[in-house]
Image 1 (cartoon, helix red, strand yellow):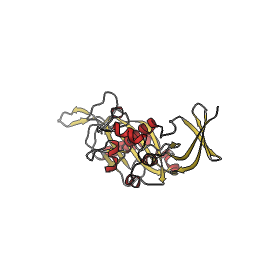
Image 2: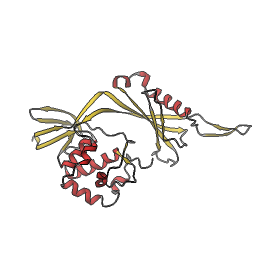
Image 3: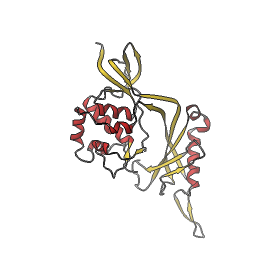
Length: 280
């Protein structure tokens, strides 16, 4: 049995903009290279986002918009393919997708819209840290305008098990040429040392360690634990998010489902998502 599906029009993308465009135009989309947004990235409120349950007094995270859209569009079949793809190629007016279980699926089309153009020469790199000592402070960001490597250190309320709501973990953001990001001078260990230095530079100190004989407060050293590193490539889109949100959404199955789910401010199934940074 040949697994082949035909579409009059098929959007191919991976960005949040491509999914919004697909949603607003009630078109099918195939996510070939998922360009998941940086978890802590935010956008300004736009009244067009009310359809997803957002209010003007909320902080709106692009990662949360991504989660809500993929949930809605998967439920109605507008998001054509689940996240089990291993490779793909284009041949003779169709796309051939190989799944993680080596299953071959063909997608043919009359019109193909390639929404995103990825630039692999430049990359945003994110180093995530568990802060074991030095996590009780009021800083939200520390900026280093003189360096590309960890030019900004973001702090967020830890989502580790047994966390204290007052304690913050950190993520270092870098933007540089992809070949430079792979250099040993920008390794995970160097990233930890750079982040530690930035924290010390603004007066952050480690966990309290009592007082000396003169009554001076003592502190342990700052202790960071590097957990993982993410890379996100630059990309350009056919239409910007601002332009898409200015258009009028086409009514369809996904629109009807959205109206039912978002009568209230949030839907329960997404409220507890580990990705949502509501605890910042």
